Length: 391
Image 1 (cartoon, rainbow, N blue to C red):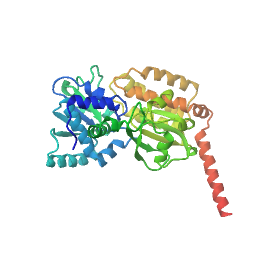
Image 2: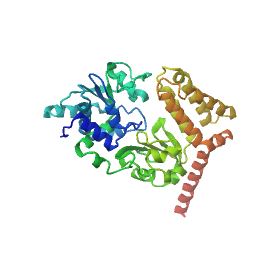
Image 3: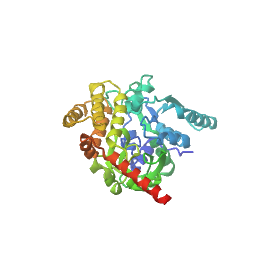
Image 4: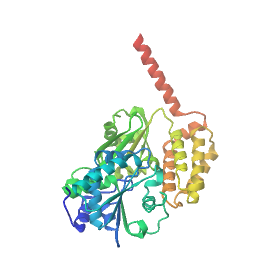
């Protein structure tokens, strides 16, 4: 059982713990909870996880649903919310229902939890899209003027926390802020769940202290040879590419990653094999992001499809100098002008791809591809090894 605390004790403990949101933005959790003001608050546990490269939230719900539900109850008690929701994709809803039923049978929870299905779309987990879906509408972002903590579900103050954040809230309520701060980076303490994919054939989810070396994170997923890695995508489809040569010196912390314009985000570490083309992979991602837009503003309706087309030209060999000029022009028109953060995140990803794979841009213009050359070299090496084994 989670110990009962007053609202102020819970909020003070969270502020002292240094817990930041694990959904990607990294906002201080205690400060976010304290900002929920007004009558009849609402609390939502967000496990939508529309990011294709992330599996941490679904894994957490599957393995520790009661921990998430504990945190949801603690958060609801802290802001005096009567309406409590859990927002999840369809494939983990049965697990949540089972856990909620077990808790009801045991008389554990003061507040009833309503489960709402999250659509399988990229923007469905954006905070204002979550609120819109809870209200019964489509899971599309809104052009927010007033913070959700003041006016969210049906204009009531609303707290939206990622399910991993809720799990940490439950643990801090049980063990205290000093326990939580005993591991991880001093500026952003605790642990975080990381989804690893790419070079290895399987996707895996691991828990590591914040501030862990990226090489150690990769090793947890069975990748310990950087010669197999061409680049690393950190933070998912709205994240940043990092060159393989930079990986050994970087840690999973904002301070370490800030000079490269990257953040840990929602804990996504995706490795690009050395023989895969980063421009082509980026073009495919941008095509997906353009298709997943809410299409509620000009940057989303017009800018993102143009951006995707220009990257398709870069990635698949139909580009010239004018392509890059036009690409930077479109990036300038998209960035900072959208009704939600989707165009901004997409533009950030595109810029990081252009910078990280600048040599590939030039190579493609000359009808070459460094990744293709690397693949040919690796194939020749394997062929030589096989011949040597037969001799």
